Length: 296
Image (cartoon, rainbow, N blue to C red):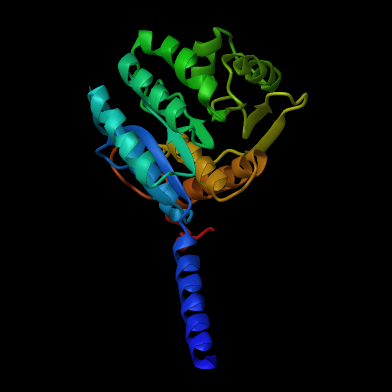
């Protein structure tokens, strides 16, 4: 009798240990964005970022871009049915902890993504409303902008526009930190949970980003020194996917932004003297990669 009890206990313990192993998971981030064949921005930058920070990256490609460090030559949107199919395949099986959304230049793709987000309701959605590339190429159709504000922004935990994008969205001129604060607050009218307004293009030797969260009176200011480098291709993509990764890892919004900004700053510094292409090269995503993390 004791022998049988011992065997039963041993078997139960083995099953418990196996279940404990299978309950572990990687912090997963789904990137919904365009593909950059030169590897510096878009899906490629997101894959590098999420992996370098210890996350598991899944993707849904919205467009194929023909570009290099000198500029964008062409954009070919992926049919909306296939964008939806990619998202559904990932959501139904892998169930990402966070979603990062990048370039979308087609109204029907916007609607397909929004429909999926309403269906699957991921915990965190970080939306980088990409409108213009680092080289100055317009990446979005005019009618898609209103679709972004109407369909996607109300579903976002955070939006991360730069100054140019914020000026398009609000029709305001942004010239200093005070107007940045006012604009960040105004962007909340689109229904997002928080706004990170990036001030990298302001004059001066300091960078100031403004994080404003709905329901909070005072914004968080993130001030850092500017780094002289032409290798800034994909910094916006990198920042937003880094924030999504830190949110997936369990950090709160201000912490996630702070850690993500530190990662991008160090990546720019590590890659500033490296020659990749003849134009705006990428930052160094793998200056200090960490092993894949596991969570319960």
